[in-house]
Length: 274
Image (tube, rainbow, N blue to C red; front, top):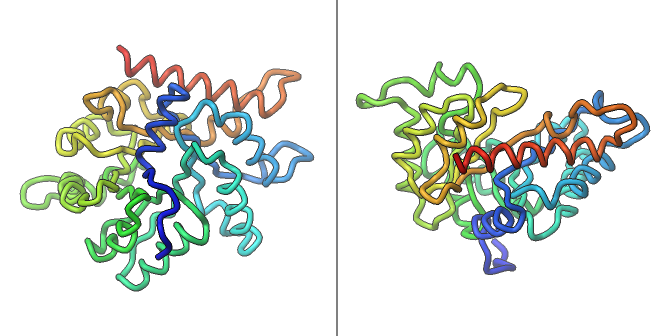
């Protein structure tokens, strides 16, 4: 494992960006070639999104699944996009990794060393030893899937374990595993009641909250349920709504994305203050 090149952690950089940009918005960088503006490469499109919105966000979240179909070319593009994000805005790679120990060690090296991500999403199903290789990178952050935003989340995450739903058990384990202060949780904006319960269990952890926009999560309810005692502690993710907003005639695509990001940021802040 390489030496930490900076004394700042993902969370400290996230919080600094949130304060500087007055934002808890996380923009997902999930490219869809079919929706990319005509005459613009996917790479240039993503670079343009970052350039247009970097003063409006607290972090970015590329999903590796949208780059893997291009194999080597796609992974090279992902590395370029991560490197192009200003250093004062952290990058969270949505990869949902989690495997037996030595495999997770390889995944962690790939995510944090080869790709240069500042945080990652993990599947905690295999337990502590599958998560630990990521947690050893003390300056990076690992977000455990807890109560995900999809409709099928109830199939497994609501199963009862010792008299309480599995997602509550994951939340409790996240507290136990957070010995380096670098564990967070993925908590869907589509389930605000569950988000409120998880916040009770984990008052200090950072939440990644996907599900607003295309998944129709209630933004205000999610923000109020997920935020911590300082009216912060959440990264509210939006992808398609920022990348591909409806633009008026003559409006440049990057300007339309900037307007969408600014609108979401302001809606999140309004919900925090109510």
